[in-house]
Length: 70
Image 1 (spheres, rainbow, N blue to C red):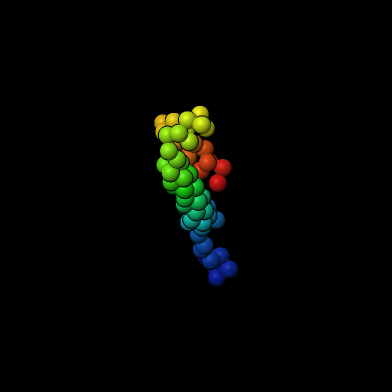
Image 2 (image 1 turned 120 degrees about the horizontal axis):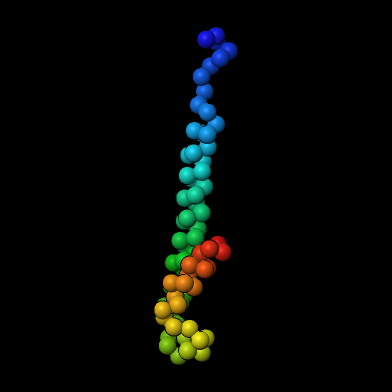
């Protein structure tokens, strides 16, 4: 092996940490949106929920939908 044939890590090994950081960043943003939506929904009283045609059983689904859009 000559000096010009230095051994470097394949690009795929270098992309893995970047992908993990990017995935974690997406997860944090989505989880923050989920938490924020759940927090806002739990502040509604039963009368407001009835006016909106929602029940407390819908909260998880609505928060997941909100997080998916974030």
